[in-house]
Image 1 (cartoon, one colour):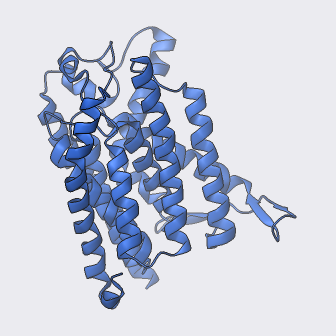
Image 2 (cartoon, rainbow, N blue to C red):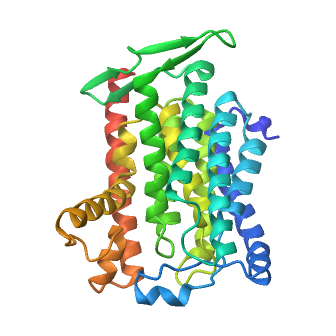
Amino acid sequence: MFSIFAQYPTFITFLAAFITVVVTIALMPMWIRFLKSSQIGQQVRADGPESHLVKQGTPTMGGVIMLIAVIVCTLLVGAPSPETFLLLGATVLAGALGFVDDASKVAHERSLGLTPKAKLIGQFSIATVFTLVAVNVIGIEPTVDIPMVYTFDLGILETTLPICGGIVIPWLYLLFVDILLVGMCNAVNLTDGLDGLASGTVMIVMIIMAAIAFRQNLLEPAIFSATLAGACVGFLWFNSHPADIFVGDTGSLALGMALGCLAVVTKTEFVVIIIGGLFVAEALSVMIQVFYYKKTKKRIFLMAPLHHHYEKKGWSETKVVVRFWIISGVLAAAGFALFFAESMFII
């Protein structure tokens, strides 16, 4: 639709973000009213911070509108490519998985939805299909690059299935990407625990991913990243403290999957661990807490994930969120600087 501006890729990218902000802000109030009238609200953890009990019943599944805005604006503003549909497909499927999880929580009026096993099976299935399509259709190389250090060839162990003209399965790369995508998916999900925390940090990270894609002349992935950032900005208007709506697993799983998939398409599978370092830290805090407690029956953190630890230390919710935004920005900038430094040598 905006092909007249095709010669201005920077403008197109910013336009995609702007339109997504507008669409998200325009549609979200109607969605909130629908959720309230249908009594579809968040079920708060019984073992969570006491200050969160007031959030019981707050509308959830804001990710539905975010996904609609991202899909419409990505297809509307850009000139959709195979990468576009692959990224959208994986993101929407992860969002659908999260939607089922959210719906289960609402239906059973509890904070736990699908079983962890069911969610992992769904996430690994999406990640596996994405990786195989990325390698066999998009032509993504099965390598992992540590900037200015070494590039690992994870395609040395592969199998070719004699179907559809031959489907190559690079086992080591498939395993690595599956862990990366599922890890990011759940890391963003764990970060979604305070008003504005997940949406604000994902916004920062997606701006950086858009810049990386743009630097590589991957305009469509850059537009996709920009729409995700725009959706987070629009959602943040309603998710800032005290939140009118939560993103839900519908949004957090989709955003995490999108981040991991973008890393694969832009070949920043290692750098994204730095860019999304806050999400990694949140996930690690849970893993460390669980492991240490099982071994010693003691806790390292007052509560996991990490943001709840600082709440327990007496920080206000707003202070935790803003400081985590700052940390996320610093890590994202560090990751981009590392990527940019190497790209200068390549160019």
